Length: 521
Image (cartoon, rainbow, N blue to C red):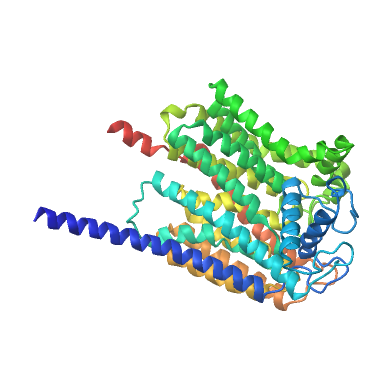
């Protein structure tokens, strides 16, 4: 009888594991299918719009430049026509794609020097689209699954657990609507720098769990690679710095290992430029191209503080060139309280659980990246991806007080880029993805508080109203961007409220219940 009971328990456990594994596989397959349909059945940015053609042509052109010119000329060549302005790892990635194409002859004539400008034939579109999907398959999706497995382990969710919220968490990570729309619709490679950031978060959480210095070293290197692929990763740099400092400040050997890991990683990225003849000049040009302050406070209409308030305050007229300093001061002013709190909480590591410290850390990453997004200089509409991804990690970490607002945040983040999707002729894909997002949100609607339910409904109704204006109404001739500003300002209000709520949760709401439970036992 005992053996029979055990057999039933084992079989039940195995069936539970099989169901969970099938759920993981199903969501990954859905995510891949979403990407394929979006990539091959929707237009890319700048399609058939000479002379610059958009971000798709920028990425194609960088393959052309890096695979045909010596490294010393990459950041100097024809800067008026999509001059390279991303960090070295982006350049190396494009160089590798060019060499792979040359070796395998996958796309004949797609990256010929000078003669391939504006090339938008089927073969180049196929090559570029598949290259983004491959990076998701090789980097972004695997590291998301790795992080989710660790999070569920820390939350003590058993392998046999299967419920609606579990599947929704996997969905938001793997199928982030805004990320898919930008990378596979508009066309960019954001999943690479975000993938490296997720690796860094994963390694820090592993360090909290196992206390092996190798995880600290790998976290530091991964974050450097993230910055070296796209400079927007600097939005995360303050919480990463304060968190790692708190973990190593009392352990000089570990601090030294982290410092050497960072130096080695940056050396690996920038060394090839510094070692060239006139290496200092080339290095300074790379840095100059990475931080183009002359472009202005923001590009197009974006859901930031500066753009949203520009209807009432002409910041450029009032402050001129001082805006760079002002935006920097405001960004740090709104970031540092979170970082200092993170520092002191983490220094008391021995009294806190790995799950609690992970929640504090990712909450701080979210707060600071939102601070950079809303208040820093030179922000694009696509930059919302930077605070959005750690917000989804917060959702998976089950941070009380914030989790319930993340699904709505996902919808609003995608909505904030709607003017860009109109320009790119991606409205069909946008509406389909938003309907899926709203459906997923309502699948777990019963778990939301009454306030969250009311906020979600009124926010969605507000977005519908603005969509009607953008799609069917004509703005006043005197204010041609009025409806676009309605869209971005409406989004900004949501981001500010989430930012304030996240601050409250970090400073006053998070409690280490797991540590208390362990002590009582």
